[in-house]
Length: 173
Image (cartoon, rainbow, N blue to C red; front, side, top):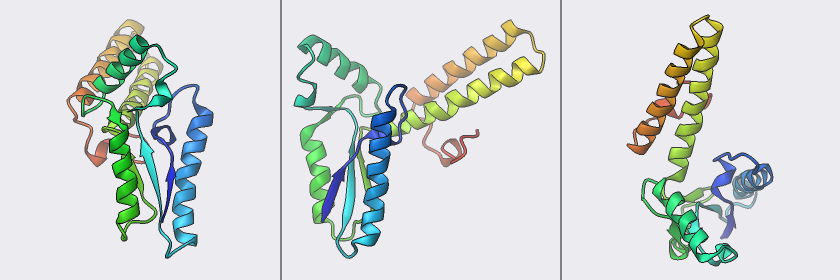
């Protein structure tokens, strides 16, 4: 089998990361296409999130630990991943003979929260624009938008964004 490596930036968009986003998204698309074209040889993609590896060794210890604490605290599992957990994903891809064309996310649930925040954050911006166009008092509209953003954060922290109604392909609520 063939195992490729992408990363969560292929589907979790972040400002200033367009090159990494493009590379990761292209790797995932390549994995699916190769799975079709090279069949019966299997091709899968491993997509890790924030993982505690020597890749971050260039950061000062205090800075690295603070970054891991902040990133891990935002994940449903409450921590960043370990190299052994990513390695288990590669072993799964190699040993499971019925898996091909898959993207295996090893991200502590990071994509779940990122997708919901992107969709609902965009919805809050849409609500703001519509409120302002409708002639509602600007201060009142801003207050509604701030409460909408806060609701998004609370629901994301509580893990409410698991249903497909929140993750539809056109980003509408």
